[in-house]
Amino acid sequence: MPTPILDADLPDTMSCEADPVTVTEIAKLFVELNDNRQRVLYGRYTLLALTALEGSSAYLLYREGGEPMEQLLTGGAMAGGYLLCALFTIRYHLAGLAAGLGVYLAGNLVTLVLHPDQFTQGWGLKVAIVTGLALGLHAAFERRKLIRRLSDLPVRGFELDMAHKLEKL
Image (cartoon, rainbow, N blue to C red; front, side):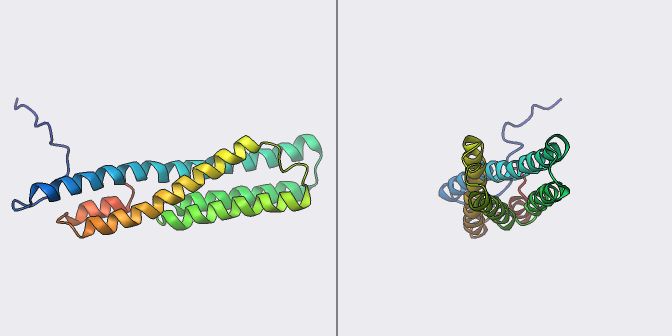
């Protein structure tokens, strides 16, 4: 059985005439793209967690608190909106995360206007959610720049496609 090559899983990005500086730059871009991939995925996971939180809280308020049916419908609509944003990030990372962050901030603004005493409840969770979505959004911006820089280098097309699809490079 032949001995496996240590770098067999590395992408085959360079042609024979590629210089070491270009090879190093491509490797650095791949590392940065993988880091940003993780942050974008964390933003998506934050949206999925928001979906679960919003849906379960709406159901519990309706079931235990005797809240009107409108509370359940509003919470279900918000959960559906977060779920759509999370699904939208599969293809359009930047737009899905921006829409999710916008919907979340708008919902908290409405809470601040209608129920100012409830706004400060759960502030730690709110900060964590905004941080997760903002980091994911920033990583999506950075991914666009990195992919543009990567497309200027001698990289094969399938690796650029992998970068666009949030696959690990």
